[in-house]
Image (cartoon, rainbow, N blue to C red):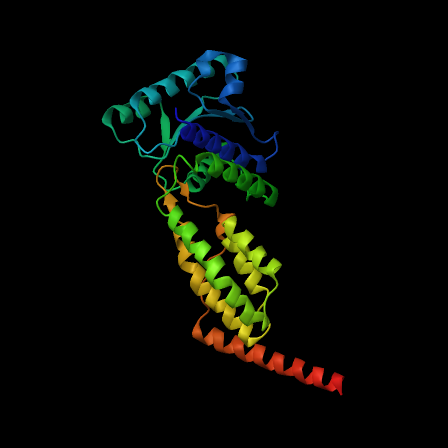
Length: 307
């Protein structure tokens, strides 16, 4: 297994485990393959996760690969599941799930699924959607109400995704990544200084420009948009913000693409942020009018104070 494939496997494993952490350990117990092997022996190799709630259990095999699952992997999983089932006689017959990125459609594999009462959860464009489908199916099996992810867990997921991107950047660089980097660099070097000069009406301090360039070097379009959005108190600043949206939205669209090798977006959602969409023409007219009136009021107040 390549280093990138190994990193992807760890990412998928952690995503699944974190998805179930919204439930207490008394509701759902989840154990990975390494712990199962330590507890029950080598017969559990090929069983990626054991999940239990009460006397119900779920056995899962996970394959996030660019090709359809192989027959030998499916058979291996069924044998491991049956071996573990024999060691847990007090639990109900397990729900077996073969979770894969690609659909299982080979006749021999479909026969094994049917004969072993194994469910296939497959055919996904990205890991996030796949894990959510798996989570909902298991909640249904356990008669539990699905719960939304907490902010803390989302932060933890963002951290492991960031580490995954670092591990796989060289191995699986998407063809759009050099284009995105060049576009962001052009924006930082050629467009940011004049935009800021217009906004501030004077030569901008180098530390402000450096701040934007640091955000660019970290690929954080979300924070760049937030910076300009927070500085739109006048009609001129508002127009500058609209110009930033026009520049960044095409780059943002490229960043939202999915890497076929990994099944994930090229960049994490935290870096991309909300879509940098232009407000409608009517919305722009209303906002400019509001800002113009507010700016005039501030000017009048300042004149009165000076006199």
